[in-house]
Amino acid sequence: MSLIETSSLGKRFNDTEAVKQLNLSVREGACTALLGPNGAGKTTTLNMLTGLMKPTEGTIQFDAAYEGDRRNYLGYLPQYPKFFGWMSGEEYLIFAAELAGLPKKQAKISASEMLELIGLQDDGKKRISGYSGGMKQRLGIAQALVHSPKLIILDEPVSALDPIGRREVLELMKRLKTHTSILFSTHVLHDAEEVSDDIFIMNKGTVVIEGSLRELQQTHQKPAFFLETEKSPEEWLHTLKEQDWVVDWELDHHRLMITVDNMEKARANLLKDEHLHELKLVKFEVAKTSLEDLFMKVIS
Ligand SMILES: Nc1ncnc2c1ncn2[C@@H]1O[C@H](COP(=O)(O)OP(=O)(O)O)[C@@H](O)[C@H]1O
Ligand SMILES: [Mg+2]
Image (cartoon, rainbow, N blue to C red; front, side, top):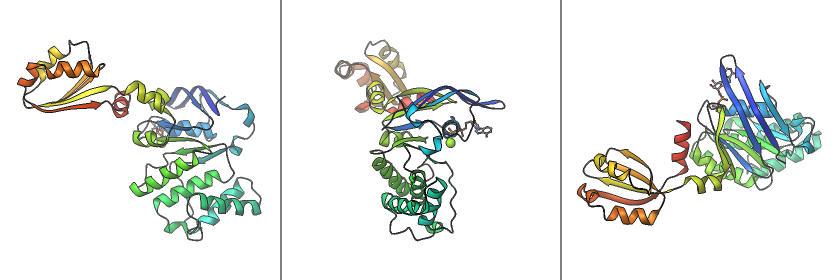
C-alpha cells in the first residue's frame, strides 16, 4: 500500500480548475517529485494532502496504519516559509516541536538532534535573521521533521535558493531519503532527476506523465544524431522523413536533431548519404534525447 493515494482529486477556485482528475500515489520509503511549471497545481495539490485545503472533488486515502490526525505522521514545509528572525534556530525548533505536541524536555532533545542532522549545530544559538537562504531552508526542513513524521512534504524546497543553498538542501534531501519518505514539488527537471525515485509530471492541474525515474529515462531517452550544416537542410529533410529508422526530428536553422530507433542503421545511412555531404557538414554528433525534451513537450 502507498502512504498516500488520491483518486480523481480536484480543486476549483471559482472559474479556475487548479487541480483536476489527479491520481497520485506516494510510495513508502521513496522520494517522490511533483514536477511541473508554475501554475501547474503543485502547491494546491500539496495543500490538499496536508489538510490545509479542502478538495472540491475526489478522495485522498492514507495508509490505514496511519489513520487519525494526519499531522502526526506528516511534516510540511510551505513554499514561502516564515521564520521569526529574532529567534535562534534552536529556539525555533523547540517551538515547532512543542507545537507538534512534544513535551518540553523531549522538544529540546529533538531540536538538538535536528540541528545536528541539518549541519547547523554550531549555528543553533544564532538568530535566524543572520542565516543564509540555504540555512533557513534547512531549518525549515528540520521543523517539518521534529516530530519524526512518516512523510515530509516540501513545496519547492530549492527554488528560491542560490546555487550554494540549492546544493546544501539537495544534499540534505539525499541524506534524509534513506530514512524518511519525501514528497516534494519543483519546477526544475534537474532537481527531480537528482534526488527523486518517482516522478509525477503535472501540467494544467493534472498528471501527464508518471513513473520511476529509471522507467522514464529508459522509455524516453532515445538515441539521436545532432547535425549542423553550412547549407539549409530543409529540402534534404523531406527524403530523410521517409526513412524507417527516423522517429522524430527538430530543425533549428542549420541545426538538426534526428531521433532514431536504430543507432547503427542510422549512422551507416547518414554517413553514406551524398546529399547530406553536399550540405557541408559542420558537426555530426551521436546524442541522446533527454528527459528535458520530454518535459518541454508535455508542458507546452
Ligand atoms: N487561493 C487561490 N484562489 C484562486 N486561484 C488560485 C488559488 N491558489 C491557486 N490558484 C490558481 O490555481 C492554479 C494552480 O496554482 P498552484 O497550485 O499555486 O500552482 P503551482 O504550485 O504548480 O505553481 C493557478 O492558476 C493559480 O492561479
Ligand atoms: Mg507552487
